[in-house]
Image (cartoon, rainbow, N blue to C red; front, side, top):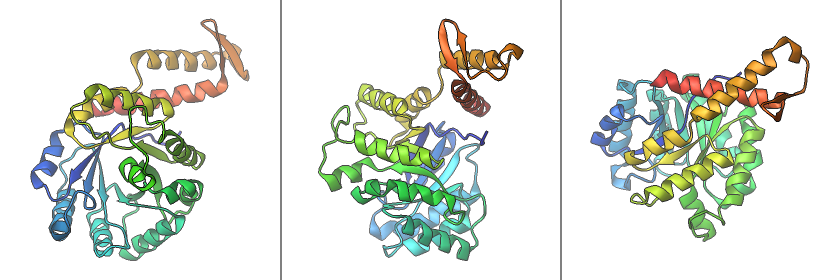
Length: 293
């Protein structure tokens, strides 16, 4: 089984806020996304780039996955952001507004030219109407080793802006697009993170949206405030009941009398071998989370 890395909570940190980046070292987010794009004003881009890359190179973030969101290559800052991010060698570089596989190919060429470390992967923001229409093609770029694509990140605010859809409780208008991107990601073996929740004072609404994202199949949620971390970590982690059930399924299929069987009866339910594969992933995720505790 492919190594599983928990991505339950991915917290955006403004690259211009040095204090916030330092505080991130004590937060229990699985992923810290240092943002050079939306969260940074144009006149602060260069300083933010320097601060972020220095923070990543200095380390001190433990097991947290470190990601730098650069500005797009079609902006005045994109090329310099990408070169600096490569030198800092984060776990991943998050590319905004990816609307075609060609964008990832262009990023991949630069990563090779700049001598990017093999460990540095590429994540793609899916946040435009064209990205939804091209989701399959974009996700398939993961099979090109130069793109290094390993994760989609939904940009629901930008998607709502460009489509004029309203982000209402339940996300009725957004769900078809979320599931289109998720299906594309799964078809090509990459992870996918849900978009942010904007109402910081609405804890119940945030939990409901996390639960919806989990039930849809997302690996985790992007966050805009540290207060959202605990709920995301809880909701996107396997529950104790799910872990117990997974252990029972794996143990049942490991019994000699069930060798070669495609389906068995377990506690009054029919369980297929495909459920054993799901159970193994659940246990692997639970073990990966436990190692971080």
